Amino acid sequence: MEAFLKVEGLTKVFETQAKTRVTAVDHVSFQLEEGETLGVVGESGCGKSTLAKLITRLLEPTAGSILLGGEDITKAHGKALRGAYRRMQMVFQSPMGSFDPRKTIGYSIGESLVNKGVPKAERTQRIATLLEQCGLAAEFAGRYPHEISGGQCQRAAIAQALAIEPKLLICDEATSALDVTVQQQIMDLLKALRRENNLSFLFICHNLALVQSFCDRVLVMRAGKIVEEGTADQLLRAPQSEYTRCLVEAAL
Ligand SMILES: Nc1ncnc2c1ncn2[C@@H]1O[C@H](COP(=O)(O)OP(=O)(O)O)[C@@H](O)[C@H]1O
Ligand SMILES: [Mg+2]
Image (tube, rainbow, N blue to C red; front, side, top):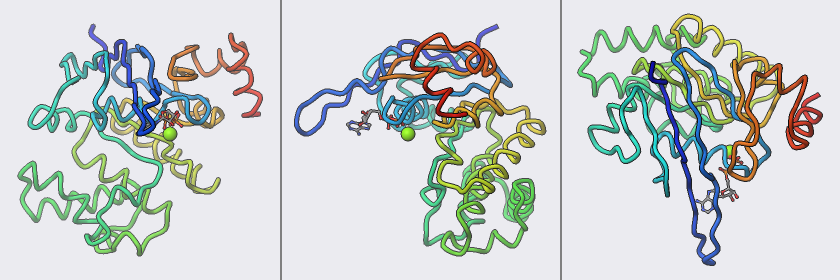
C-alpha cells in the first residue's frame, strides 16, 4: 500500500540577502502511514519548520517531491493546493497567527465551511461542535482573538484546522509557546482527537519528552538532514548517534 505521505529528497536552499546560501532542508526522505503519528525532533535551526512549510506548500522546494494520498503535490497551487489542504492542515507555534484579529474566532473557524458551501445554520452548529470537541464553550465563537488566552487560542486553532476534516495534522511546535500545564492539556486534547478522528500527525517539536509521549516513530534532524529514525523508545533507550544521545540527555 502506498504511504499516506511520501517525501523524497526534499531540499530547500535559502539564499540570504548577503548572498550566502543556507541548505535548511537537505535531501529529506520519509513516509508516513495513515493513522500514524510521526515525530520530528532536533535542535533549533535544524530545519524542522522549513520542512513543515515545504510539505504544506508555504515554501517552494529547491528539489525533491511530496506525495499526499498518492498525489504529487510538489508544485500544487490553486485548486490542487486547496484539495491538498482538505487532507492536511497545519497548527503553528503561535496560534494568534492563525486568526485575523478583526474577525471573530467563529468566523475564522467557519471560513473553510463557507468555501465548502455548508449552509449558515449548519455552519453555526458545526462551529459549536468543533469548539466543544476542543474543550471550549460554544460562546467562544463570538470572541475575538485578543479576548482569549494563549491556550484557548491554540484550542481554537486546532478547531479551525479540524473544520475541514483533514486526515493529517502537521503540528510545528504547537505547544512550545504555552506554559507546562496548558501544554499538557493541549497534548491530552491532541491524543483524544487522534483517537476519535483516526488522524495522522507529523508532530514537530524540539522537546523529546513530549515527542516520546505522543509519537509512534521519530525522525531526528540535524543541519537539515535526518540522522536517525526509530520508535521513541528505541531513541530513548539506545540512541545511535552522539547527537541523539545529547537530545535524550537534555530531555531527562
Ligand atoms: N526565509 C529564510 N531565509 C533564509 N534562511 C532561513 C529562512 N528560514 C529559515 N532559514 C534558515 O534555515 C535554517 C532552518 O531553520 P528552521 O527551519 O526555522 O529551523 P527549526 O524550525 O528547526 O528551528 C536555519 O539556519 C535558518 O536560519
Ligand atoms: Mg521551528
